[in-house]
Every structure is written in structure tokens, then in C-alpha cells.
Length: 133
Image (cartoon, rainbow, N blue to C red; front, top):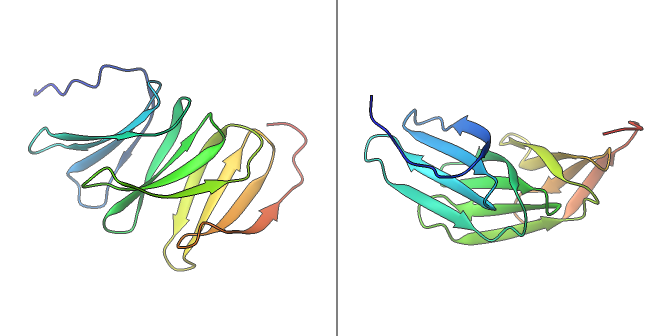
């Protein structure tokens, strides 16, 4: 078995649809894009707190959610920050991308689910009702 060094506490893992790219959410305020064939990683640096979740967003991008209450969209090949989605008042715990709707959903400790236009980063909806995270 090959070893790939992450060097950080891991908060979340996601496998990309290509079956060879592992996405890692880390407590060192980074996300990692790991090519399991070449063992090379792209480190996504920019969050101000733990990265709690990471998912694929189309063919070349990934989304990270963080304890800093923000969602970042990155180019997974270069590590370039493309867009910031801001508005939650608590840790972003989960994110989902709908290619069909071209929308990002985010769930947070603020007890809300936000809907975002994936291209503009504009908040386009909000779901309420929970009284606890």
C-alpha cells in the first residue's frame, strides 16, 4: 500500500468522479486535491479557520466550507481561488453542488441552508426552520 502524507487532522473526504482524485478537508485551514496515481497534491490555502468540508464542482473546480463561515471555489488543478460565498453566521458544515440547477447549497451551524448562484456567488435563497445546529 502506498502512503500519501497529509500531515493534518482530516475533517472530510470526497472522491471525484474521475476515480483518481481525492479531496481532503483539513484542520490546518487548507483543502487538499490529491492525485492518487501521481501522489501529487494541490494545497488550497486561504481560509482563516478549519476546512470542514470539500466537494467537486464541475470538471475543474472544488468547493470548500470552513469554520470561518465562508465557502470558497477553487480551480483544483492550479489552486487558484475563483470565488467566495459569504453570508453564513456559523461554521459551514456541508455543501452540495447541483449541476442541473447551477446552484450551491450550504448548511451551517447558524441553522440555515443557503442557495447560491454558482457563477456569481450571489445568495439566491434561504431555508429556515431548525432551532439548533
